Amino acid sequence: MNGFLSRIISLILVFFMLILAPLVNSYCVTEMENRRQLLNEVTYFLDVVTDKKSVTNDDLNEFYMKVSSYGMVLDVQVNRLVKTATRESDGTVNITYISADNISLLNQRDVVQIKLKEKSESAYQKILNIFLGIEDEHYSLTMAKMVH
Image 1 (cartoon, rainbow, N blue to C red):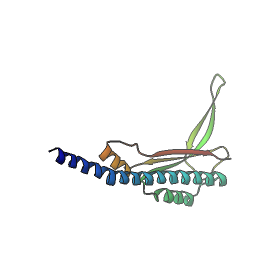
Image 2: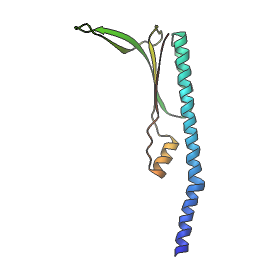
Image 3: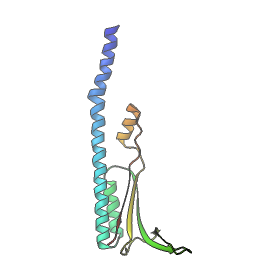
Image 4: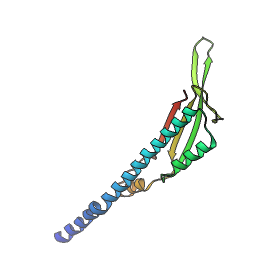
C-alpha cells in the first residue's frame, strides 16, 4: 500500500512541477509584460498630449486601440482637471482640481489624468485562483501629468 500511495503522490507532484508551475510562470511573465507595456503607453500618451496642449479624437482613438491591443479588457477614462481656487469667508484660499467636460483644448496648469481598470479576469488570475486559491486584485493604473 505504501508503494502505491507514494506513486500517486509522486504523480501529483510531477503534475505540479512539470505542467502547472511552468504554465503559471508563463502566464505571469505575459501578464507582467502587458502591464509594463500599458504603463509605457499611458506615459507616452500623457507626454504627447501635454506637449501639444490638445487632445483630438484621433489621439484618443489611437490610445484606446493601443491599450486594447494587449489582450486585457480595460475601462479607460481620460479626464481634464482644471485648477480652481475658492476664497473662504475667513480669507483662506482652497485650491482644488475639478474635472472638465471638454478635454480637447488644454490650458497651462491643467492636469490630464488617465485611469485604467481591468474589467475581466485574466488567465493568470484564473489559474492562481483555481489551483492555488490566491485571489489577485484586478489591475488598475492611475497617472496624471500637468500641462506646461
